[in-house]
Picture (tube, rainbow, N blue to C red):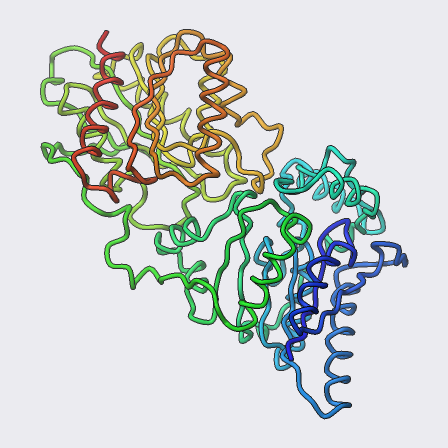
Length: 511
């Protein structure tokens, strides 16, 4: 028999698991929900993360004692949702020999020495709590969300009005020390097989993880271990409320060791981002200055100032990835194409290593642009910025109040609104809100038909806002194209889309 031990996240308690637990029980499983001290009516002074780890350990030990008492055996699957993964992982580190699997349910990846605070989705609140920690606020509580505030903690996609009402009415404050106390791990829990269940409406997907693993970041290669599996649920952050039957089935499959496995970076051959550009272009040499590479047309020598296109890579890209994005073939390809057409092409490295890095990356890009404009071969009054993929939110910086020298803004398979689990709600990095200030700035947007639904929704939100305010947006469609189509889809339609997009941008520069 499989015994599932379910650990709930912030502000919630065992009540959130009722429907899922009923379905698991009906399928023959044993189910236990952990009542975390200091939440859902269990009040106590001095509650911290170690308190919650002890709560989980008590349930594990109880299940083991019952199994031994009747002479039977149980496979124990420990499930942690949201914050609940932190006490779950802490307990797994101390009872690894008794667990069959740990399931990370739309949660972060706890690390030794790192408090749960680091995984909070709301970045502004995270910074505020970090300040509180410096003045010893360990005995305080974080108030539970009001009904219209749950989206700060994750996507509410799929929740009915009644479910949201009940979630709010039963919510309890979160003891601050549970978020501020660093997690202590010995490493023993690493031996327990794991499963990640990703809620795609909250901004995560298996394909995204595979992309990150494919970049070669050593820290992410553990996700490609054969003992790690993944599932997706097309819903928001609370699947036990929005799709309990589907969640129960996924948990049963996870207990059986099923799920999708990721491929390690060294097993996929040439990763897509390092595939050659799909067009044959002149081998124009690069000139490296600071964090930018310039591709300068030969005719620029002594022929006056030329317009420039600055190509901005997406991300987040883990720090230390080699080669760095400004040397990736697809980005170099766009820059060289511009140079072949008589325009200075530029690629740039910026420090978007995590979703918390958007302010820093935006500053890097602004500094790079000024470096380009200061080059004596560049016409400082004729510059275009071209954003790709995860750099899309940074377009808001330029859309809100375009400078006169910005002649065109381009975006290719961009993310044009923060994902729900990024914690950027209310931030300045929201292009759909910023486009109202774009005025007459031309925007060239390359949209792929086979985009992930979550990213496609941000593009449609942006286009709707642009239409409403009368912004000048030209859409280049690639109906059969994937995210990163220049590397993945080497078709005539892809080549034609690149030609159209480049010519549209250069037309605005040369006008």
